[in-house]
Length: 183
Image (cartoon, rainbow, N blue to C red; front, top):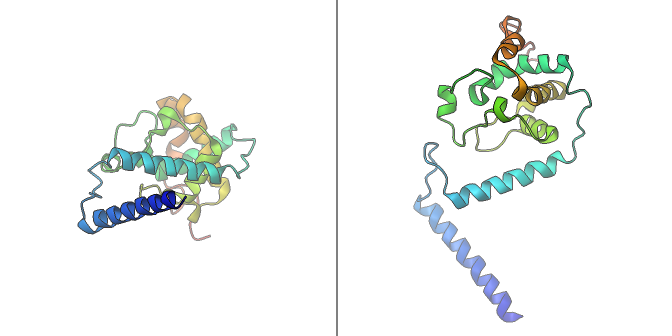
């Protein structure tokens, strides 16, 4: 038993020392135009997904996410807040998106798999990814409207998107998306 404990302690000390040398040396490149090492990406991805899944498991998803009004309201928020990174039907890559690492998912291509996880991500953001915490400036109702849109978006044509995000979203309030952040 003592040998196992000493072995575990030795491995922990070795990993800690190796991590300290890696940090102190500046060897790891944090530039957004240089991908993570495969192991780093795998560890970050696994930790991110587990973290979001665990927190989202406590969220109750509204029953009315398929209503046209929610989808329309979601488009009014998505157009100014999200298209630069996540695109929309008919859009090409943007300059902003080209410089982001990790690359944000193209949500109109694969949508969302779990509404609760999408809501949590939109509300709280993701550290060191460029994904902001929109819950700081938007109420839950608005965030659920975005989730409703994201559920519908993969089946949406470019024309349907243009009809949803058209002129009525332009110039709507100070933020360009129908409400004011001074509430």
